[in-house]
Length: 258
Ligand code: BV8
Picture 1 (tube, rainbow, N blue to C red):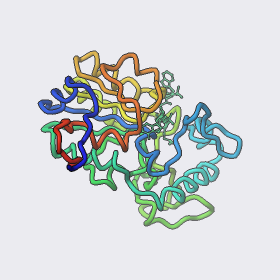
Picture 2: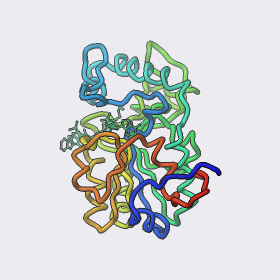
Picture 3: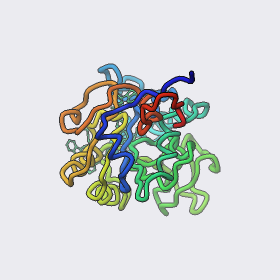
């Protein structure tokens, strides 16, 4: 007798998951935790770099004061990320883009693991760790193509100094990114909020926007968050264990096809 796939989530979620056409997924650091990417606020304390809370080292103010220090912080995170691979949560979300007519993946993560898992057209609200942007001409380049001078990459187009192509605290999000995400949140029938502590704005507004527009909002997180009470359903646990099972019906003899 083959193992029985156990159903994750309520009958209502199964029903909506099997009929929905417009689906939005918002992810945070927690979706990459099982890949080995450290979260920012896991276990109650905030990530710290050289004695500075990450909201300080990852801030517009720090960029203005000490660009090499900011590069050192992101170089360190990129080095740690190099060996890490997408996990079953990233892979399940990548499969969902084929399943739903209007599927939108919005991430706060800058690690690029969604794209590595095969997700296309990812709305990166906070930029990407593998890219740099020129202060002078605004050109974006993949960091793997760039030469570095005095810890600061130099633009191959204009020779200008480059900065990490990530959104720092106190900085505006990439033009159009939040607007696109908010538009999809207003239209979606089903919204998954996966692995985020939902304290950083304006990203944390998206589930509220979806809920207010009538979407069924589902949180996937091993811990409660400020959003949990607003959600229609909370799937308490690890994204890599839960997401592959979402939509699986509890048919005796069924195997996890995921
Ligand atoms: C802006 C890139 C306009 C860099 C990041 C309104 C109210 C209050 C404050 C503000 C506000 N509006 C603006 C602000 C200020 C600020 C803000 O929100 N501050 C917070 C701290 C209160 N926002 C901004 O500055 C934004 N810009 O608003 O511009 C403006 C301009 C000038 C002045 C005013 C306004 C820009 C914010 C973007 C900053 N850049 N990242 C970098 O990475 O270093 S934010 C960064 O932190 C991430 O991208 C992410 O957004 C956030 C971390 O949160 P999470 O991803 O949720 O991660 P966390 O560790 O916190 O939680 C992980 C969760 O996963 C936990 O719940 C855990 O239980 C769960 N988990 C763990 N394991 C698993 C799991 N879940 C599932 N499975 C598992 N296995």
